[in-house]
Length: 128
Image (tube, rainbow, N blue to C red):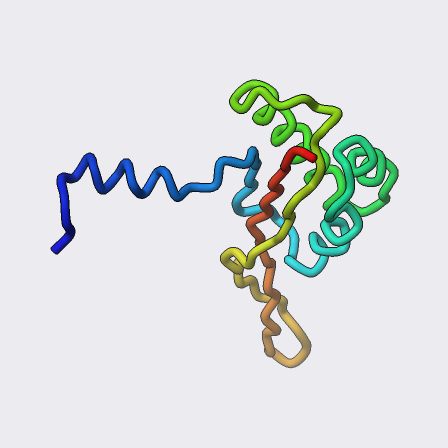
């Protein structure tokens, strides 16, 4: 059994949470590998250069990651009172989401499976 009152347990659990501003997109309709090409390019960069990189990147994932960066920056300013100039991309990663399975008809009555993958993308910012 847990020790202490329920509110005490919740308070201790909330103290261990990460206080850094972040933004998460669940069920993004792209594979993890395609999202990681963009995420690898911005990891560790300061916020303004990361936004510049994804703005001029031709990949589809870059438009999604740009919105995530803007959202995380807004969270940092409003919730944590951080300055936008001091922010940098501390962590960014894509985790595997569910896969939609579809069927493609082929010759002689066969059917091939098409897997439409999804991913959960997370961007965490921090102050220098």
